[in-house]
Image (cartoon, rainbow, N blue to C red; front, side):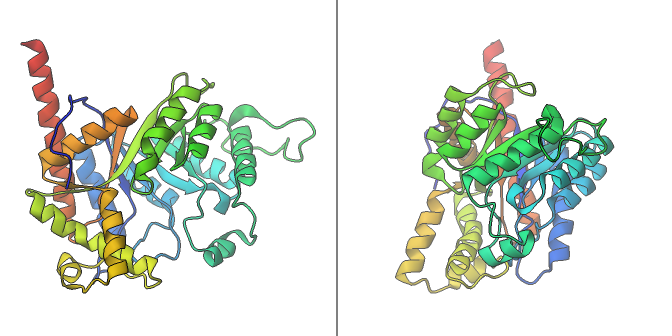
Length: 354
């Protein structure tokens, strides 16, 4: 349930964060087709950005290759920005990422975003299979990788660096805007120090959002790419015509989380399966904790809670992740939310002009 008390409305751009959920009874191919369909739907509704996540060997999520889906979605849409939310940099060579995203930028100039994360997006064994090394998990290694990526982007390497003559081609194309993804003060400080945009995943760290985003703004240092701090708050949202239905739809992800944390990952269960599950005490506590990180309710309730969170975190944009079993109801959730924000914005303009 969300906070019913509404703050002063601050119209903010809306974006989509998509993990390509795989509903029970369907396939990964279905999930990817749903992602493309949702992207087209989101552009028609006026969403500004569409970001794809990176997850590996995770039943229920088909988002293993965001750069491929970015190219497909950018080609199918016309004006919406499309990007990674994000690329888990420790899994990849910075040169490979620089080249991939320069190609995307060359094909879709001015429409690509590159969000960078530090988490592996996988269990340790899968991360090792991706990297062929156990390194790259710590802060020092990640900072080094970011510096390497920035060097390919134009900062350049020192004269004594072994990669000083390596060029990320096509080298006449700029790297897309860089965003740091995170859920901690550490990621906020790094984004601020490097003069990058910062996107906070509230669904993974709801209690840390306000402090981290405030820290980012306080410590931000202008860079060649970004003169002023720019932040996005990402939130897990379930929006339906009624609060009761939104609560039912949210049950799917709750049971999915219970199974995943219990070592029994599955595809995304239906609301009916979630409602019929016999939750033990530990499972019930896990679901209750998960629910605190969600925004669940009717369009007005969800809008008001997102407004409150945006004010509290001073976010410049909102990004919404919605994992609903039925694709049509997932589309409807994004439609209702866009309508609520659009109606409220129109009301704000009318009030200010009267």
